[in-house]
Length: 261
Image: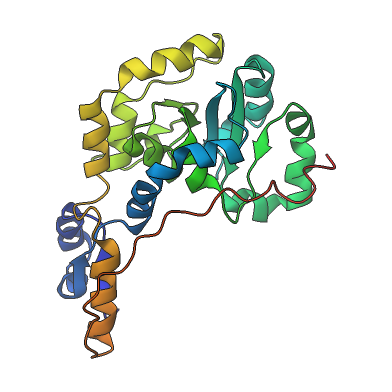
C-alpha cells in the first residue's frame, strides 16, 4: 500500500472508491502539474512559435500520436508525409510529437529513416525528451488521437482534429471520451486544409473551458499541494513561500540526425 496517492480530479476519488477502496484513505486531490505549467507558459507562445519556425504568418500544426496499433501513427504510419505534402509550406509549419514508446520500441535511427522525406519537406520532428509542451502552447491546430497530448491541446484552447480515435480503447465517462464526443474526425479522403479551418467551429470557449476543468479540480495549485504532501510524509514543516510554477523550456533542437536527413 502506498503512503500517499495523488489524484488530479475530485471525480477520481469516487473511481477509487469503486475500484480500489482500500487505497482511498491515502488518496488526495492535487490537480494536474503538467496543465499548470502549460498554463504558465502561455505568455511565451510567440517565443515558442519563433523557435519552431512559425514565422511570417505561417500557422503551426502539431501532429501528435500516442503509441500502439490504434494510435494515429499505428493506424496511419504515413501521416506525417500526407500532412507535409498537402499543406503549403509557405502557409503552414508542421511539428510532430511521437510518443516516447515509439522511439524506444523502433529506435531513433529507424524513426528518422521512416520520416526522412518529411524532414526534407520541413517537418520539425521533436525529440522524445522535450518539446511537445512548448509546441502545444505554440500550436494553431492539433491533429492527434486519444493520447494525452491531444487532450492537453484542447484544454489549452487549441482546436483539434482526431486522425484516429479508437472508441474501444477509451474508457466511457473519462475526460478523453468527452473529447471524442466533441472533436471532429479527419476525413482522409478529403483535402486537409478546409478541415483544419472547419475544426474551429467544433470548439467554443465554453467547450475548451469544460475540457480544461475535466483535467484538474485544483487548477494552479498542484505544486503547492504536492510539496505540502511530501513535507507531511517527511514529517517536516512546509515552507511558507509558495513554489514557483515555471514555464516549460523552449523547444529542443530536432532529434539527432534530423539535419543530416
